[in-house]
Image 1: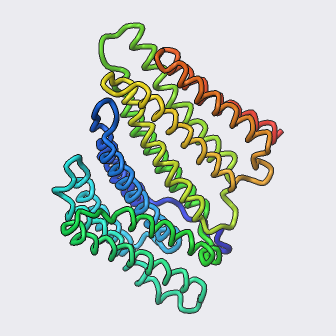
Image 2: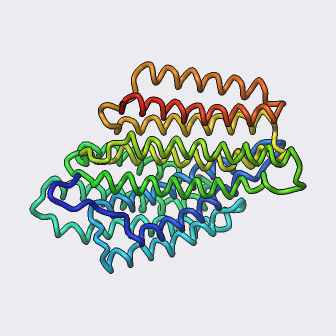
Image 3: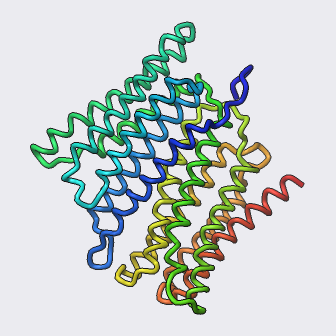
Amino acid sequence: MFIGKKEKKVEFIELVYDLVFVFIIGRNNSLLHVVKDGVVDWRMFISYVLVTLAIIQIWNFSNFYINRYGNNRVRDYIFLFINMYLLYFMADGTKANWHSDFNQYQVAWGLILLNIAIQYIIEYRHHLDAPWELTQIKRTIAILSIEAIMIFAFIPVYHATGFLGAPIAIAFGIIATLISSNINNLVVVDFAHLTERAMLYVVLTFGEMIIAIAGYFTGKINATTIYFSIMGFLVVVGMFLSYGKVYNEIIDKRISTNGTGYMMIHVILIFALNNISVALEFMREPEVNLLFKTLFLTGSIILYYLFLFLTERYAKERLKPTKSFLAIITLMSVGFIVLMVVFMNMMYVNIAITVAYVFGIYLFLRRFAKCIND
C-alpha cells in the first residue's frame, strides 16, 4: 500500500469507463459466430484474439495511470471521456468485414494510446524529485508512444502488402511492460485499488456471460429447457463463486507490489471468460462441430482456472497453495477434460460434468480457506 496515503477508492467515472468495455466485449465475441464447416473461421478467431487483447491492454494501461496518478480531477475526466469516445470507433470497426473499417480502427487505437501517453507527459513535471518514478514514467511514455507509432505505421504497410502488424504492436506492448517491471518494482501501486478494478471488470465480464446464456431459457417450457437452463446458470454461478472466494478471502490486498503480474494474469483470465461466454452459446448450436465446441468450452474453462490460481501468487501468506492443493486441483482438471471428451455425445451428461467440476473447485477452495483460517 501507499504509506501515509489514504487508500484509493474506485471512482464513479471508472465504472462508467468500464461500461464501454462491456459493450466492446459483446462486439468482440460476435467475431466467433462466423462458423464454417462446423468450426469458427480461423481468420475470425485470430481477429477475435487480437481485438480482445488490444482492448484489455488499453484497459490495463488506463488502470495503471488512474491507480498511480488519478485524482478525480477535471483533467482525468476529460482524458477518460476522450478514450470512451474513441473506443466506440474501435467497437464499430469490430466486425466480420473489418477490412472496410481498418483505418478507422487503427487510428482510434493509436490515438487512445497517445492519449494515455500525454497524461503521463503532463504528470512528469510533478515528480522531478523522485528519480525512480521519473524513470518509470519515461518508460511508460516510451512504450505507449512506440506502440502507437507502430499502429499508425502499419496502416500503409497493410494497404501496400496486406501484412497485418497488429500482433507485433500488441506483443511489443506486453513484452515491454514485463521487461519494465524491474523499474515498476520501485514504484509501488495501491494494490487494493488495482485488485478492485480487476474484480469489477471480471464481474462485468460475468454479466456478459449471463446475457450469453439467455438462449438456454428460450423455447418451449419443458423438462429439457428447465434442465439446461438450470445447468447453464449453475456453470456461471460456480465460476463466479470461485473468483469471489479468491478475491475476498485469499488475495492479500495490503501487499507492496507493482501490480504488473497481477494485471497481466487478469488479461488472460478475462480473455478466458470471453471465450467461455461464446462457448456456452456454441453448446446450443447444432451447426457447430461437436468435438470443436466441447474442446473450446473445456479448454476455456481450464484456462480460466489456471490463471485464477496464478493470482494466488498474491495470496495471504497462510493461504498460499500447497503442493497437495495443486495436485488435487490438477487431478480434478485432468478428470474434467477426459470426461468431457468421453461424454461429448451426451449433452445431458456433458453439462452436468461441467457443473460438477466448477462447483467441485469452489467447494475445495472453500474447504481449503476454512481449514487454514480455523
